Amino acid sequence: MTKAGSPPTDTIKPPLWVNAEITYKCPLHCVFCYNPLNYASTFEKELTTDEWLKALREARELGAVQLGISGGEPLMRDDAEVIVAEASKMGYYVNLLTSGIGLTEKRIAAFKAGGLDQIQLSFQDSTKEMNDFLSSTRTFDLKLKVARLIKQYDYPMVLNVVLHRLNIDHIEQILEMAEEMQADHVELANSQYYAWALKNREHLMPSREQLEHAEAVCNQFRARLGNKMKLYFVVPDYYQDRPKACMNGWGTVFLNIAPDGLALPCHEARMLPGLEFPNLRDHDVRSIWYESEAFNAYRGDSWMKEPCRSCDEKDKDFGGCRCQAFMLTGDARNADPVCSKSPHHSVVTDQVALAQQPRIPDDEVRPLIIFRDDGNSRRLS
Amino acid sequence: MSLAVEKPLRLARQYKLQWEKAQDAWVLLYPEGLIKLTGSAGEILQRIDGQRTATDIISSLQSAFPDADLQQDVTDFLEHAHDKGWITTD
Image (cartoon, rainbow over the protein chains, first blue to last red):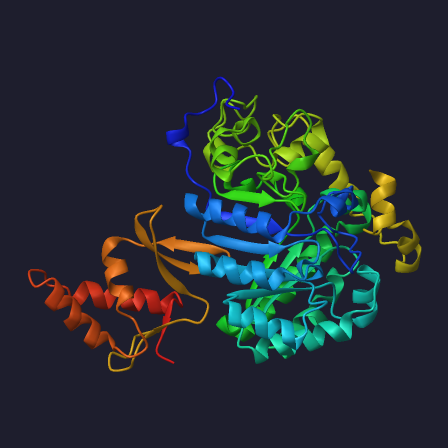
């Protein structure tokens, strides 16, 4: 599988972090979901328990040590407990990323006994109405119950709230809720515009004024609560003039395994044309990581074009995100257009300019939004 | 924040210390991250067990490495680890 000109195996560092997307099934229909639009096509092809354990064992042998169990909603699989317990025995630090739906006391007790290290609970908003609307389901009370269970089982409370134009003005109520739930860590990350969130981008991107207000409120909570509740606030990268160091570089740290066994260097890479991503069913993790054409495609910097190739910051941000470069410029080898040095930067700034327009009332926005659900997934495939 | 030398030390709740063969090092694991430890940091953190105090740890290291004067370096490291939230006396 090795392509001529790809870096020699001995300069490639082993993966450290595996993200196991064990299913794309999900009871929620979040409008900012980053799962692929055609996620429903994986339903009939999901890896079995044994196939998951084999892949995790192989990655662990290479040196991977952080493991996220995510989805979709990972609790939709009834072998999540087995996967967690076996992975923990292998020596992984195991983190469950869940909406909380399906996390009964029986299941959390089994996770605890199996050695689960961390639970990250997502919330869509602080209000029942908005949470239920944004996730297109009635789940808010259930999530509060789960938050109490997480504390009861002596897990740190890690809350993840995706921010965007429709909920960011509720930041104060969101943080009050987090405080009431005794959250230890709160991640307030603006949605990134991939997959479903890209479809809904103009309805999700906050204005500069909204961002400034949200950040100011965050700072007030930080000043008052200090280390008791750690807050991470992440603005949309469209508002930056340098791109994020996506995945800390392609194929350097991160291995994403999709429900159907596809091995990917990031959550979104499936969309990139011209790359054949290897499947865990056909190849072992070692050959995938070190030898596959896909994992070597954007390693190092020989693939770069200008302005990245001669840029003195290329070792810092690796030219940004390959998927974003592809989505917004049509070529994954281009600089991520978030960069002000990119000749395509205006596709980002135009979008930001659009986001400064006055907000249209929520009830007019709602019918325009595309929810992540199985029907839409099949239609958009 | 200065560290109480007479109180037992333990790793903070979210942290796990383990030997990683692939990295040939002790690493400290925490949610979504890891710290690869130097040899001396690994020696120190291995001795944190919920029972031993900073004073105990220093004397244990002194007897393991009798030729070195470790007191200040170990104290500095433990204070650093405490400030970072890796270890606690609670």
